[in-house]
Length: 230
Ligand SMILES: [Zn+2]
Image (tube, rainbow, N blue to C red; front, side, top):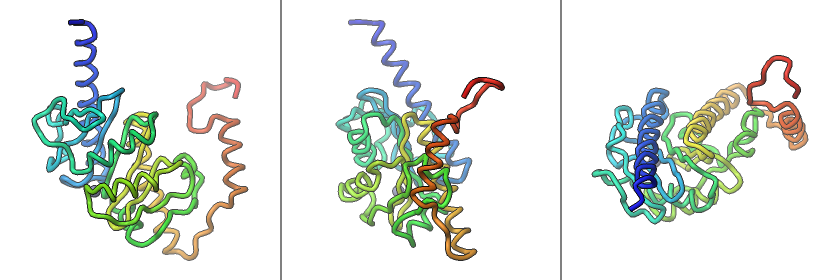
């Protein structure tokens, strides 16, 4: 037995489960998940750490986080995984670069998902998620039909809404997936406030292109040292 790789594997699994527990408590502290609603996962290679079904995410610890392979077979943990396990695994299959998935019943996102069929680009920050966000049609939680609908809604996007249910966000790391979940909630809240004031004015395709051009040129969203060349 190769003890080096075994130890590394154990460390990786432990770090993955800790990261999921930390992200779950953070999302609860920010009001995006309440009680047992919502689920979080992180992936490294063939391993996926995912929140258990029925656990309070605001107090989740690493030992309670399930570890499964990409086929859904449990590798570690005593608790059964979330009923949305199939959804998370499907997202990882569709997007091999995805390393984190966050599903919430966050208030503004869920409210929007009860009303609109899409979230237009009102603010340029939404371009970080790929543009206009789709709303996946309603299917009962935990079903293959819901997973298929959400995977389709995520095509070319890093977030989507789920009709009369909630939201999902994906990232190249769990930290990014959390960031995208927070951004989705902010955008849904912005949309509600804008609609309350009148008829929102979405950014035109040309305006979106112009923003992307400036962002690429200036490295928007990243820090720079003073005087460093852009
Ligand atoms: Zn849900």
